[in-house]
Image (tube, rainbow, N blue to C red; front, side):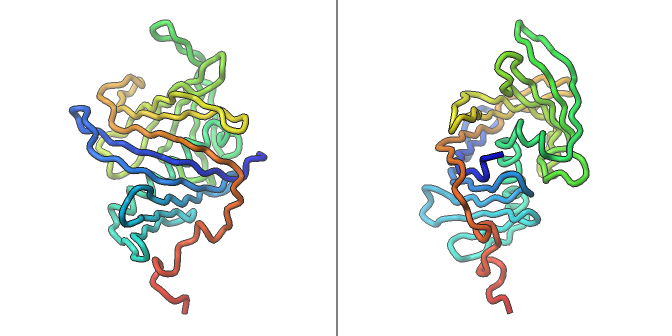
Amino acid sequence: MAVRDVAFVATFTFYDPAGNASSDSVGLHKSPLHELPKVRLESLGLPDPVTLGFDGQQAWMARGNTAVHDPARLAFSRFNMVSNLFWFSLPFGAAEWPTTVTDLGEQSTGGRHWARLKIVPGSGAPEAPGDWFVLYLDPESALIDHVFAHITAEFLTHSLWVGKWLDYQEWDGIKKERRRQFFPADAEGTIIGAMVAEELVEDVRFNNHFPTRLFEKPLAVDGGQPT
């Protein structure tokens, strides 16, 4: 609870069915914590900087001072930003959000053992990328090993996914995964295809004291003068 906000560098890479990287992006993610999700994502390494935001209700995007209004791009950006904050907030957020948490017991596969918790966001919970999530926890460290989830984004052709949480590092006494990899799964939570996306989370910094206005849609993006 002493951690009030977070910033980190996020690198997203998407892969085609042959396993080749099809696109990637790098951005500086900024978010307050312990409240409705708000995100500011500032591109890194682009000649024309792109800034994306989610103010808790709607997403916005600007290339320089020019607004981007493409609905498909905004929908994907909103999903990406909300998902990123949701994943980073696990497992701590499950203790704060209005959710139903169910103990599914232990599971063993191939000599590995996990404790399983199912999280179902309830009415009033912050926006989430899906409608249920099963956390597979290492019984010794209590760290998340992987997540099985039903993802509800309209633009996805598949809804069941497994995310692997890898390369844990410690920042200010809190251990978080540095790498997340996402794979299509079947109804039993078994991976059924090649990796589709990977994210690296680096340079995590807490308690940056971001002003509220940082997450508000800029006037230039919202059409100009407030009058």
